[in-house]
Amino acid sequence: MSPLPAGWDLILPAVAHPRDGREGALIRHRGTGTYRLWDGTSLRSCPQDWATAQTGAWVLACRRLLGLSQVALAARIGLAPNTVARIERGELPLMPRTRLAIERIRIVVDSDPPA
Image 1 (cartoon, rainbow, N blue to C red):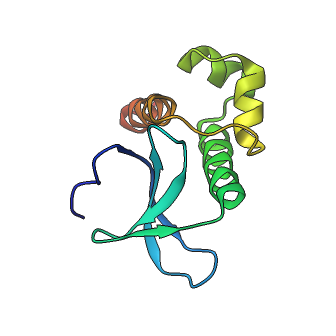
Image 2: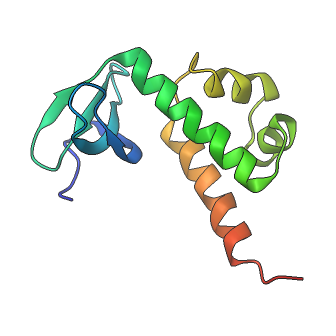
Protein backbone atom coordinates (compact mmCIF):
# COMPACT_ATOMS: atom_id res chain seq x y z
CA MET A 1 0.00 0.00 0.00
CA SER A 2 1.21 3.49 -0.74
CA PRO A 3 2.14 5.92 2.04
CA LEU A 4 -0.65 7.51 4.02
CA PRO A 5 -1.75 11.02 3.17
CA ALA A 6 -0.08 13.75 5.22
CA GLY A 7 -1.70 14.34 8.60
CA TRP A 8 -3.23 10.84 8.89
CA ASP A 9 -2.27 7.96 11.21
CA LEU A 10 -2.78 4.25 10.58
CA ILE A 11 -5.23 2.75 13.06
CA LEU A 12 -6.08 -0.68 11.61
CA PRO A 13 -4.34 -2.05 8.51
CA ALA A 14 -7.28 -3.89 6.93
CA VAL A 15 -11.01 -3.52 7.44
CA ALA A 16 -13.99 -3.95 5.14
CA HIS A 17 -16.16 -0.90 4.51
CA PRO A 18 -19.57 -1.39 6.18
CA ARG A 19 -21.55 -0.38 3.09
CA ASP A 20 -19.82 -2.09 0.18
CA GLY A 21 -17.30 -4.47 1.77
CA ARG A 22 -14.29 -2.98 -0.05
CA GLU A 23 -11.15 -3.31 2.03
CA GLY A 24 -8.87 -0.54 3.11
CA ALA A 25 -6.82 0.72 6.01
CA LEU A 26 -8.68 2.56 8.76
CA ILE A 27 -6.89 5.85 9.29
CA ARG A 28 -7.51 8.82 11.59
CA HIS A 29 -6.78 12.49 10.98
CA ARG A 30 -4.40 13.95 13.58
CA GLY A 31 -6.11 17.32 13.69
CA THR A 32 -9.81 16.50 13.52
CA GLY A 33 -9.93 12.91 14.77
CA THR A 34 -12.03 11.94 11.75
CA TYR A 35 -11.78 8.37 10.50
CA ARG A 36 -11.53 7.40 6.82
CA LEU A 37 -10.71 4.28 4.83
CA TRP A 38 -7.58 4.49 2.69
CA ASP A 39 -7.28 2.08 -0.23
CA GLY A 40 -3.86 3.31 -1.29
CA THR A 41 -5.15 5.89 -3.73
CA SER A 42 -8.22 7.54 -2.23
CA LEU A 43 -9.87 8.40 1.06
CA ARG A 44 -13.38 7.06 1.60
CA SER A 45 -15.73 8.24 4.28
CA CYS A 46 -17.05 5.78 6.83
CA PRO A 47 -19.42 6.06 9.79
CA GLN A 48 -17.48 7.36 12.79
CA ASP A 49 -19.32 5.17 15.30
CA TRP A 50 -18.56 2.13 13.13
CA ALA A 51 -14.86 3.06 13.09
CA THR A 52 -14.61 3.35 16.88
CA ALA A 53 -16.52 0.06 17.25
CA GLN A 54 -14.00 -1.62 14.91
CA THR A 55 -11.04 -0.35 16.92
CA GLY A 56 -12.68 -1.39 20.18
CA ALA A 57 -13.33 -4.89 18.86
CA TRP A 58 -9.69 -5.14 17.78
CA VAL A 59 -8.43 -4.16 21.25
CA LEU A 60 -10.81 -6.65 22.90
CA ALA A 61 -9.71 -9.45 20.55
CA CYS A 62 -6.02 -8.71 21.15
CA ARG A 63 -6.48 -8.58 24.91
CA ARG A 64 -8.30 -11.92 24.93
CA LEU A 65 -5.69 -13.47 22.63
CA LEU A 66 -3.00 -12.34 25.06
CA GLY A 67 -4.98 -13.71 28.01
CA LEU A 68 -4.93 -10.37 29.82
CA SER A 69 -7.55 -8.63 31.92
CA GLN A 70 -8.34 -4.99 31.22
CA VAL A 71 -6.35 -4.09 34.32
CA ALA A 72 -3.31 -6.09 33.18
CA LEU A 73 -3.39 -4.69 29.64
CA ALA A 74 -3.81 -1.16 30.97
CA ALA A 75 -0.78 -1.59 33.23
CA ARG A 76 1.36 -2.88 30.36
CA ILE A 77 0.49 -0.03 27.99
CA GLY A 78 0.33 2.80 30.52
CA LEU A 79 -3.40 3.52 30.52
CA ALA A 80 -6.07 3.50 33.20
CA PRO A 81 -8.20 0.31 33.19
CA ASN A 82 -11.30 2.43 32.59
CA THR A 83 -9.68 3.85 29.46
CA VAL A 84 -9.13 0.34 28.07
CA ALA A 85 -12.76 -0.51 28.84
CA ARG A 86 -14.00 2.64 27.10
CA ILE A 87 -11.87 1.95 24.01
CA GLU A 88 -13.22 -1.61 23.87
CA ARG A 89 -16.79 -0.30 24.05
CA GLY A 90 -16.12 2.17 21.23
CA GLU A 91 -16.51 5.20 23.49
CA LEU A 92 -12.94 6.44 22.99
CA PRO A 93 -10.78 6.40 19.88
CA LEU A 94 -7.78 4.12 19.63
CA MET A 95 -4.74 6.35 19.48
CA PRO A 96 -1.83 5.28 17.27
CA ARG A 97 0.60 4.98 20.19
CA THR A 98 -1.84 2.71 22.04
CA ARG A 99 -2.22 0.50 18.97
CA LEU A 100 1.56 0.30 18.64
CA ALA A 101 1.96 -0.59 22.33
CA ILE A 102 -0.53 -3.45 21.94
CA GLU A 103 1.25 -4.61 18.77
CA ARG A 104 4.57 -4.67 20.67
CA ILE A 105 3.05 -6.86 23.38
CA ARG A 106 1.68 -9.23 20.72
CA ILE A 107 5.10 -9.46 19.05
CA VAL A 108 6.83 -10.23 22.36
CA VAL A 109 4.26 -12.87 23.27
CA ASP A 110 4.40 -14.43 19.77
CA SER A 111 8.20 -14.56 19.86
CA ASP A 112 8.48 -16.14 23.34
CA PRO A 113 9.65 -19.74 23.03
CA PRO A 114 7.32 -22.36 24.49
CA ALA A 115 8.13 -23.38 28.05
